[in-house]
Amino acid sequence: MAGIGFTLRKMTGRGDLWGIVQAYSYSALLSSGPWLFTIMSLVGITFLSRYLVTWDDLLIFRTVITYNFSFSLVFCGPIVLIGTRLLADQIHDDRLEHAPSLLFSMMLTYVLLVSVPLIYLYGYAADLTPSQRAAAIVGGYLIGLIWTVVVFVSALKNYTYVSAVFFIGMFIAFLACGLLLTNYGATGLMWGFSAGLAFILFGLLGWIFVEYPALPRDVFILWRQGGTYWVLGVSGLSYNMAIWVDKWVMWARDSKVDIVAGVLRTAPYYDSAMFLSYLFTIPIFAVFFVNIETAFFEKYNRFYKSFQKHATYTTIASYQREIINFTLLSLRNLVVLTGLLAILLVLSAAFIMETMNIPFKEIGVFRFGALGACLHVLALFAMVFLSYFDFRKPVMILNTIFLVANFTFSWLFADYFPLHGMGYFLAAALTFILAMACLVYNLKRLAYGAFITNNPST
Image (cartoon, rainbow, N blue to C red):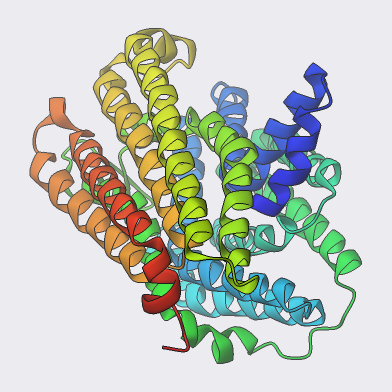
């Protein structure tokens, strides 16, 4: 994202409000595009259809989309992290003729991994009509494939085109659902939503093939080269499971869950409040990627290039102090900004619930979710800094701790309705504290790590 940030930062420096709006909008889309698309589309479609279809049809549609989103994130986690690293290596080595092969390899891997659970769940276990089964399976494929494609889109510079594809896709989903829901109910909603997803997927693929015109010749490149970065795969899997594990616990333990299509369990009151709390953190992502990560990369690059120029230890130490001061100052500012956002969300929770037409009983979950999401984002940023210095194993351990803690705390509080969401908040707080401690410790040993512990030659 740092490479993108240089271009986006130029937009903010043009001196006009539109440039600032463009830069932060593109940053939000590139960091959270499929997620943002899904949430906004679901909100719009729900408002459109609440009086036009039965509650059962709407519940089937929302539940299938939620499950597909869960499947796609978990199965794409290791694929996307390993694929991102391999693409970065190709860009560094100027071997972009292999990019289409990597893309197809990532897409093929996702399809192979997700096919068995998707087909079993929707094709056999769930009580759905044949058309609904097909729509649910197609939707599961499309969402995950978009996640893999976004990795490559992030390396391109046509942000206007990317934004247009997402918004047109969202409009197509909204329009198609509106046309189909009256006559086809849940089936129409699922196929209409998939139409929007398909437009986004093929629209992004089209632009990628324009930028990377080489033919894919090695569709197993991810499997051959990805083993080197297995730690990243474990990190991606544990991190995305950690995001979802508290929802899985609620679906399994909560006595007030809805059972949809015979086997699909969901807790709408918990899920909607948590998704809404995530949505409010997107501006923090945009600020981080446009301003902080870009400036950090410049200092990071100068530090490592000083090795190649045979700089003195005094010079290297000064660059190290510059990185430490900038990183800690940036995180401090983010803590202040995110803390203010968290306080604002907690105090205005009742207004937000009323405006979004969400039952007031979800206010506790939303408040815990908002506090947890803010701490979660800060922990993620600390792990991004660690990843720049290739501290893969510490990041993997932090993500595993997040997963275990979120599962454990959510399980302990599952029987106490007033404390729903507390498990996620405590897990995020613990991960943030440990991530900050790990970052400070490794920043102080940065030169040692560059020359000794992270040096392949030793």
